Length: 120
Image 1 (tube, rainbow, N blue to C red):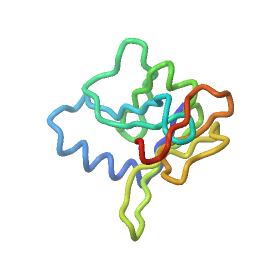
Image 2: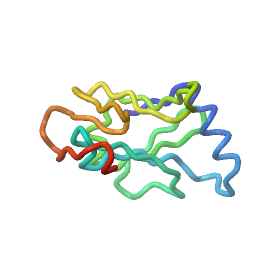
Image 3: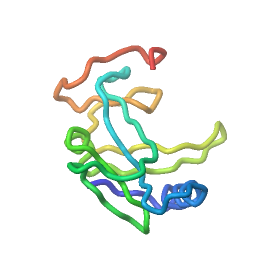
Image 4: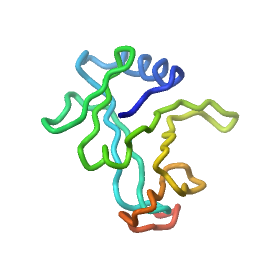
């Protein structure tokens, strides 16, 4: 389903080590909106929901709800360190178009409504 790059695993392990919950995982999701139609979201969650798809890679648990799983099949979570700062990103083979802000994409099926990048 979703893979996590070695760089992202290293960063996530550091962040999760600061938490006080060994069951915590990374929730990755998609919401309609953004400048290309859909936006990515990520955050830590205490536990998966009953209908989540759960994968685990090198001890990092990833939770994805059924709606988001449709758009994230085959995606990779990566961590990019650049001169302007680092951050997590999603490499999604289903994205046919992405926005310059890097947080939104179009899957080609018209599922979301595009908004300007400044509208967040």
